Image (cartoon, rainbow, N blue to C red):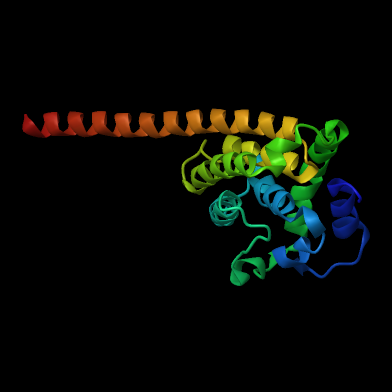
Length: 207
């Protein structure tokens, strides 16, 4: 089976496409790699160091739904038809892929089947599902800094799932942990800072 970067390069840059594509169109490339494939595709826009306005929240919702299905042991993923058929501009997708395919190729160069129990057994997939679900929630938070690192964690973890490479998935889980720490720190800082500001206002008004 061709590598994901080759499939995406061929589909989006070497073949004729209409001016709009849907997620359902892209999923035709997945074949039996469906869970890892979808998660990689959905996390890619937010994982890149380029602006992805409007994508983190809806894609985060879809990723969360997929993560829950991983946790419950589903073999075939389900996604809302309305979301999978939502049209996206071809040039927008191509822009993300131009930035993302070189990173895919770097990971593909070191990927190989290893530590299969992490990606194929129920406990391993449940662990991956829980981590991805938490990172998807972080992606949905409309606060700067809570999207990119969690999305990178999902991307790397899911790529390991796609390639049956438990070592890469383990690395992704470490990134997910870092993403959780970062998001929690940002939220605590905002809550603490907000509380302090309210205290200052109350004190000033009391005077």
